Amino acid sequence: MLVTYAPMFLMLFVAAAVSGLFFLGASTLGTKNPTPEKMTPYECGSESSGGNHLKLSVKFYLTAILFVVFDIEAVFIYPWAIRFRQLGWLGLEEMFGFLAVVVVALIYVWRKGALEWES
Image 1 (cartoon, rainbow, N blue to C red):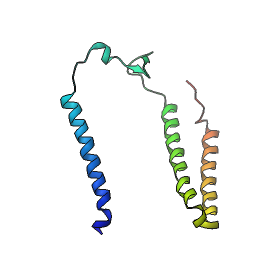
Image 2: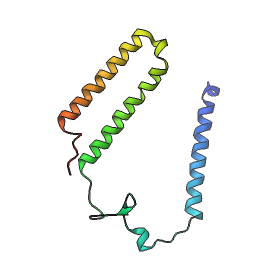
Image 3: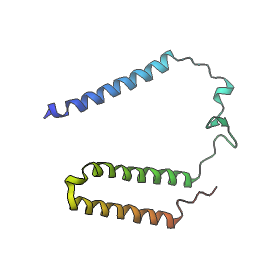
Image 4: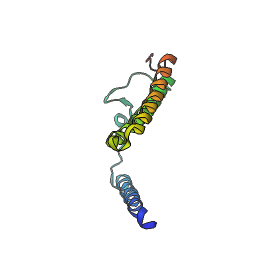
């Protein structure tokens, strides 16, 4: 059974080793010259407007979480599309049920006003 999972564990080990090596290399070999210009906050490469420590609106977090949720749900459609012919009518029925749940959730979120971006 270990032979089955060996490639996955090898991949995780290599990923952890490479990321650790990059982090260690950046922290030890990188130059540390914090100037006032480097320490100023910026927004997408342009000058920041407003305070440095302002809390973002809850609407921002809600929109970000909803994006992630609906994005992950959309990812489930791709494996289904690949195996569409093998799954037959039952697979089509299951996907319609899944999409119905997604649409109901989207309508609920829309009616609650979570998709309205107000400053």
